[in-house]
Structures are given as structure tokens and as C-alpha cells.
Image (cartoon, rainbow, N blue to C red):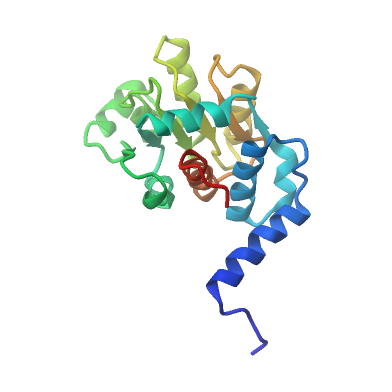
Length: 209
């Protein structure tokens, strides 16, 4: 067996130091750079820094939302489970995917359960974190077009080969006057979405790690 690092604090410090050394972060303001570092750390790919797309106000808006007690809506249980609760004391993390109303709603709407679950979100002033389903992001944008209250921030990391790149491109092209962060292309995932939420939790608490 080759030697390996066993000290958790050393692993943690070296990991974030590596991200900051290797990733192209110079184009980001300080708060957005901290979020980018966490997202990169969650996936191990420094090259995604060049594909992160965001509105100028997303960090400020999301931080303010957490500080005033806004909920976080997650499109799947994996995103919700990835949120570190101690970083967001008192924040309600909500996932409606397994709500008993969702199967009937999906059938009535002729769409996926992930998309139907979005219809149960009270989006006004909330943070939305999507780390799985492109249809959830598409449906969120449809709801905003229909007049649903705007979230404080959309953190969009749907992943896959059908609809992921397209849904994020639609968000970037027309964010519906809503602060957003997304990763262009097919890549994404629950770990990235929850990492973005955790980063905002750290910033909202006044910390920089």
C-alpha cells in the first residue's frame, strides 16, 4: 500500500489550496470565487471554473436570503442531503419530490415527477438548488413565465445528456430577472448544487474558508 494522508484537517486544507492554485478564479469577485471553489472541490474538476455562468448579483442576493431566513428548495433528496445543516442554522431545506401529490400532478401535467414537484414550491424570495433534473429547471422557468414569485437565487446544476445543457442555456439566455449560478454544458450534479448552497451558508455566516 502506498503512503497516503490520514489527517482530515490536512486533507481539507490541501484540497482547497489545490483548487485555489489550479483553478482560474481571477474573473470572479471574492464572494463568487468562494462559491466557485466549493463547487470545484465537490467535483474535483478545476476546469469547470471556465464554464460557471452567473449573474453579478447572485451571491449578494443568496446571502441576504439566508440571513433573513429564506428556505432552500432542492429538486432531489441528494441535494437536500448534501446541505450541511450546521452551516445553515434555522434554514428550512425542502424537497417535494416525494410528496404524495406529485405522481398525480405529474400525470395531469404530462411531465416528470421532478418537474411536477416544482409546482409545489413557494419560490418567492427562496433559494432554489437544482442538481439532478433538467425538467425541474425547465419547469421552474415556465412557472416564472407564468408569473410565479421570483426566487432570491437559482443555483442550477442539472446533469445529463438530455436537456441539461439546454435548460441551463435557457437560464443563462433569459434568467427572468432572477439572480442565478449555473454550469454550462452537460456536467452538473447534486454534489455541486449542495456545495453551492453550503458555500453561501458560510458566506452568510460571515466566514471565508
